[in-house]
Length: 196
Image (cartoon, rainbow, N blue to C red; front, side, top):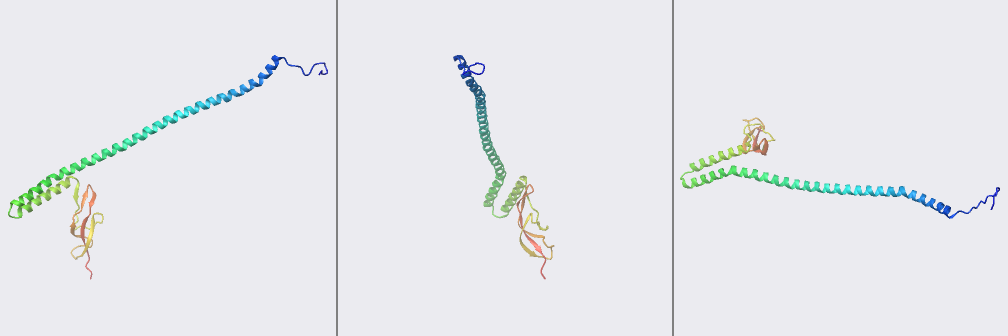
């Protein structure tokens, strides 16, 4: 077909031109694939880095967990050892008292009168009290003092004109402190006014 100026509008392409025309869309496709391919490679690299980091952090976490568990076990062993040492020290303090009690009993068997036994028991009581004192145990002074619910346990009330109300008039069982901490309250009888 010829145009107005006699130029053929449907010009046939040479094989070289056809090849060039066919290559252009292919090159365009390749050019489009390039960024996608590089993005894919970048994503793969980031996933590998994240996986490596996750493995490293997991390893650190497992090590820290194991260290914590070892610390707990070591602390428990050390605490138990300290308790055993404290108990051993306490038992050593009481052994001489037991020795003296056994001597007093042996002496009582050899004596005709109870005076030797009584004296031996008094010595043991003094030794026992001094041992407790060395360990930080002190008796609570209660008799003839105002009733203190923090240190005394009232067992009975006694009517009395001789004492102010709420005064300890009798100590039924001694109370003790250990380094200012209450071990056992003193069991006491407390005065009250006589009823008319």
